[in-house]
Image 1: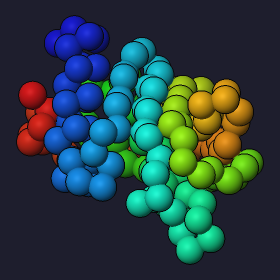
Image 2: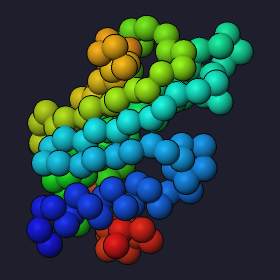
Image 3: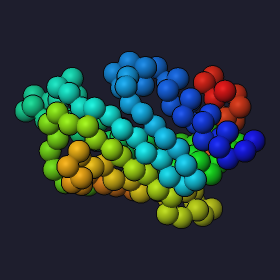
Length: 146
């Protein structure tokens, strides 16, 4: 399988997830070698009671962009998030966010990837890093990886 074919299959896998067809409908993922970019328009459906974006949404954007950056180099197995640390920088109200994940290191312990979320003004709103490890499921077995 070519790298481009692998990247398009990962994007299709992302879009096939029920979560991304429901509450995260409209999110856009682009996968490249050791990099993934995820965009999402934020509205009040993602807010907590204080009228700003809930922390779970920060995590979703950061984890997914780092995950798919790591998955860009793993062509056989579905990866699992072993750990992920978030640093919140600023609150988000309604805006369009861009999360960019990048692979930093590949080792026996897993793939270390970082990610950052930027608002439409180009300001950093959150960042983090995680370790992703091979699971037992093969990508070819997954519905949506077509």
